[in-house]
Length: 229
Image (tube, rainbow, N blue to C red; front, top):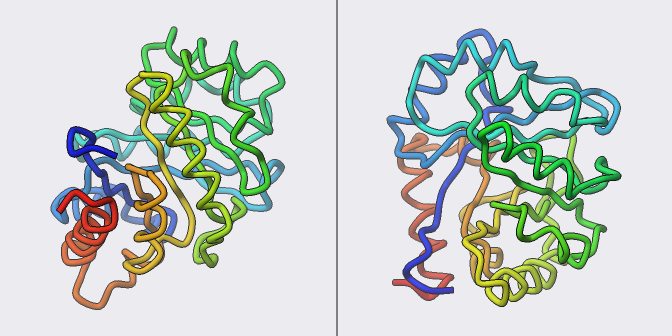
């Protein structure tokens, strides 16, 4: 990893108060986050239900900070346009939910958004090998998706390192994101393995000194662990 690649801290709004999402978004922006992730769950691909596009659109006016939609849903192609229209600049789909992944990622770009592909913990890195040219971000899940507050799966770190090498070898400006159980301790292993975007939800919301202090701490540990300090 080089200093030319920024390390980004991105909160999941899954632990937020859903009754005041616009205010929650403003508070996250004031805390210094780099963008905001919306965990979209359909009760089918994962056993939970969360945000539809109208909910995200309602919060979009609260900030100019970029939104990313992590679509943990079956048949994501049916809904891509709705989440782009809701104001999400980055759309992440799961490789496991896309039988025609190349086409899905190309469609996201055609809609004017950046494309991302997520891999569940058990899904090998080589699944994305032949779609890197259509991909702006690869997300290595460090928990099984569907619920917040889960424990970080450290055994994913070798896969993160493999993805880092694949991306670097491609020469493409692809971000490598991790999501699940990211805290001030677990972020170290993910950063050392080569991740450069870090999703934090439960830990960040529960940080005793507040969200801004949590963002600062996560960023500092990631920079040090990546060898950029």
